[in-house]
View 1 (cartoon, one colour):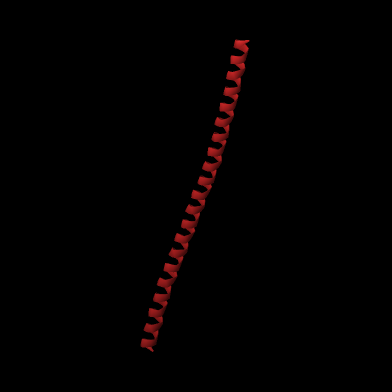
View 2 (cartoon, rainbow, N blue to C red; view 1 turned 120 degrees about the vertical axis):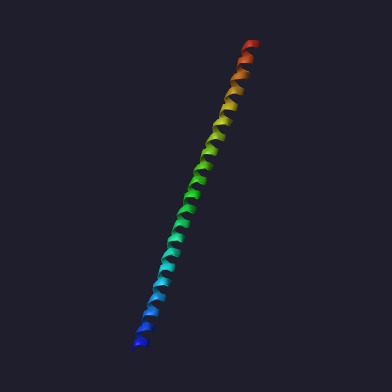
Length: 77
C-alpha cells in the first residue's frame, strides 16, 4: 500500500511539473505572438508614413518647379 501511495505521489509530482512546463511554454508563445504582432504593426505604420512623406516631397518638387518656371516666364515677358 505504501509503495502504491509513493508511486501515486511521484506520478502526481511529475504531472504537476509537466503542467508547469506547458503553462510556461504557452505563456512564452503568447508573448512571442504579441511581440511579433507589435513589430508588424510598427512596420506597417512606418511604411504608410514613408509613403506619405514620399508623396509630400514629390508634390513639393512639382509645385516648386511649376512656380519657378511660371515666375521665370513672367520675368522674361
